[in-house]
Length: 141
Ligand SMILES: [Zn+2]
Ligand SMILES: [Zn+2]
Image 1 (spheres, rainbow, N blue to C red):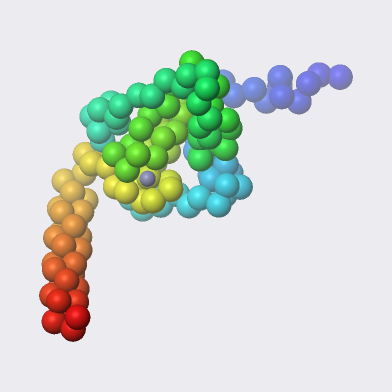
Image 2: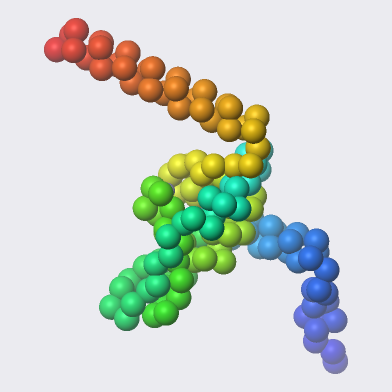
């Protein structure tokens, strides 16, 4: 009997590979209670490249929240600006689909000018709201 997986092994087609990755990511994410925001554009390549790398040392205990695997000595993790860290490979797949941190929704830069505009607008709105809240706080305390 031939092995099912041998016969159906993914070929080298990058598109097919990409789809496989996406499917795998969604299954993993669903299992781990994470949500992929597929409406968001992917993070910009430059932003991903810029992320600092953390190489796991022997005594560290780090779990990648995307695949829930325990980090092993010598593995590279990428550290997002929000300080959440993930396997290099896991976060690259994740950020090729959406620009936000799976844990806290911190948004990375994108290459999409329209989305960047919206992101700036949202950030300004948030700041404005915070100022209003502070003002109200100071008036009523
Ligand atoms: Zn991982
Ligand atoms: Zn985060």
